Image 1 (cartoon, rainbow over the protein chains, first blue to last red):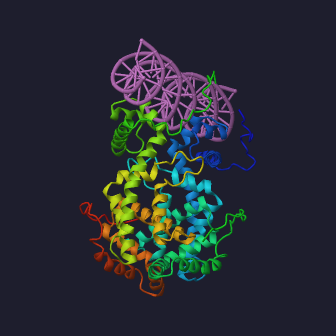
Image 2: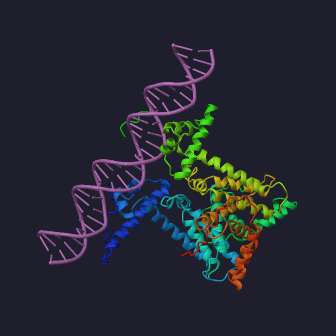
Image 3: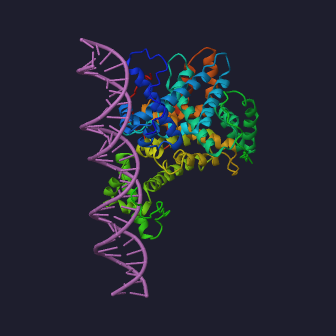
Length: 252
Length: 252
DNA sequence: GCAGTCTGTTACCCCTGGTAACATCCGGTC
DNA sequence: GACCGGATGTTACCAGGGGTAACAGACTGC
């Protein structure tokens, strides 16, 4: 039971005679319910649970989405779209900026997204579309998508040579992996991580390795990153969570 | 419903397999069988199948490994150990080398590994240990492990500050993601990819973006990477597959 | 002989993904 | 109104996979 929502809203003039019209809305509602469940119970939610949350039973879900993978793919598409949009906005800003600012803003946008909704992120990373592929389940496809988006931004001519794409996918993986680690340990606040990663892409690694080999050890890296961390503190969209308490950086 | 008949909660004899020393050999044999099946059927192999491959039945597997996650974790540990060893050897070479050579060798070692055995790689990436964690299934732990390994190599003093660890995990993710993309599309041979990624870490991105913004578009990146690609052709272990021809990128 | 433990088995439970078959409402058409 | 198509919904079921209980030999050591 529990069929709240009174069904048949009909408050708006349902003039559209298209048959898919109503079913599209139903589909969205089902997707909403699935989203709620997945965000609450994690990606292992059963179809029964999702159906119950939607106030219906399994076969309806299967009529709409084919199978579980279809549902999850539809769900993932939504979120991926959202993220890709934000990334695109950060990569192609309206006013002219330096390349470094663009990269930094892009990184921060990504991090802000996964920080704002870790559940979505986990779902996308670990489950979305991982089942369908025959043998080699491509890494969740959403990462690929963002990568291609970034690659296109590197040379807007459409050439998109191998190096650019390798870099783009590499950068996405870089931000994703360090972001994942950061989400778990929270060793610093987001602007600092953004700055560290931008530094890394801007050639901080050879510098750090060279100096550490010669004599002075790790202080170099620390100071380098910290100096730019401050300047990055206010670049990207909000979505900032509250301070979330301490967890001191514990940087030696 | 009906009646649960006590049982109350999974018993969970953590690490049930510890007792006999002779059982250790059996354990290895079981693990071998599981390995065979997983490499043949992919990570979705059922416990029944694995048991059959080992010539036994399910309960024995459960006595040895607790549950499926335990088996998979044991399996993953093996392969991760192997990879971590290779990485460590590449990061800390016996004779003195330049930092750049070390990084390049490390990247190439990783890529060589995933190229040599994609099945293992897929398994580690997608399944290993992804189930056990309560809510947030950390990314397969093997990536983390390699990351920590790399982080330690950055400042051998043991400090391992935040920037170094952020970089290390980022680099691992970078190599992993681009390697994954490369495995799927094979847009170039391994040495080229290794060179591209090393270039990226050595500050090629700002250069490329600056020049592409000013005038010349993508030729810069291509030539830069190609020049070093040749020099990297013979750094790490072989395991090279045949050329596999040139699938043109042709991304949507 | 007995206890203990390791090996192995059969048979079972429960849950989950997925399907079949049947019942229903609602909008449109003659 | 009668009728029909299509979406909505249901109960009931199946196959298969994870996991467990309970029992059966075999080997050790006393």
